[in-house]
Image 1 (tube, each protein chain N blue to C red):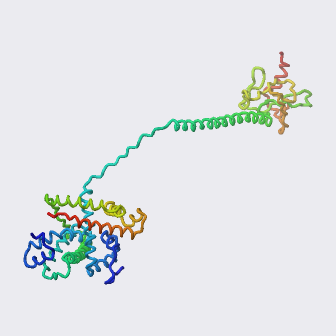
Image 2 (tube, rainbow over the protein chains, first blue to last red):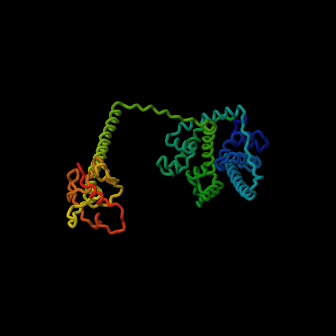
Image 3 (cartoon, rainbow over the protein chains, first blue to last red):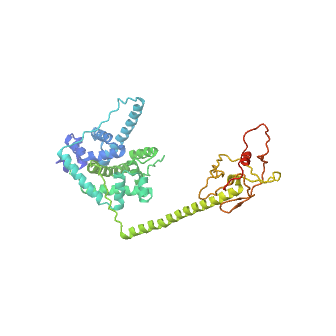
Length: 192
Length: 237
């Protein structure tokens, strides 16, 4: 029943004390918030921690949500702030690590992978959707995505390889990701 | 360091540069500061981050676990056509005459060296007749008869016929001029006639040689060769 409600309605219910409503918000947005954190932090373990901290902060501040902005924008802002906090913390820990070379305080936290059958089916479906979306890209956009993600080339290397300006490579990649996002939005993956 | 004004958002290039960590540290800080203040850029950044992560996750789940394929390339066997073989044969055949020419040149050079060596021998004979002629007759007007005078020749051994034997540098070979046999105590022509009819003039005596009949050392009572010849008389042929 909660799946049919909008994000704003879910927030209202969550503010009213329905914990399931907030759980539905987390289910809808956990992957996207994690992706945003991954884009900012570049590390999966830190991104998972930041995403978790984001939802904790959102839950604590539910009453401050005015409804003037979309829930997604509200979560994005919390996530960006959380990522910046994580980065500052990581920098401090790195400096402490170099001060105390034993590194005893440094602990890498990696969330255990989820191997439930439902998650596997979801991952398989998402893989198919993304594969088709990438395949549907125009060639000049797809080749940039492949070079960047699969070949792990730098923008400069791609520029030299394709013999196009550096700004063209970046704009092509941006356009490719934008189109991918739109195609993925049109074919949403059923989250189990 | 790039700073973004409140109404000036970073472009799409800055977003992908930040996501793929190809932005300078100062620019990253400016970009992050702008994200905190700009909701539109935050949402735009979130959209691109999601799309990027989906591609990343797809690659990881579908490709990263694949084993690296072992690539083996089977090259087709090279087949040499008849034309190519003929071409190779012609090329190798062209090398044979060149090699033969080199051999001929070496042979001609050797022959020239051999013939030139004979000329050198003849020249050396002309220049140094003492090496071949063992006896140089010197006319002695005071004695009234021609007498012989020995020239210092080492390793000289008289032969059976009374001739001076060969010396180390005077061995007769095919290409060498044989020494003329000279009988002792015989009147000898003032010239030595060589076997190949090459007249060799006697060199002027640069050193006055002692005569056999004149002895400086009166105390020396050893048998004189000239006295032996006088006692024996002329040879009977």
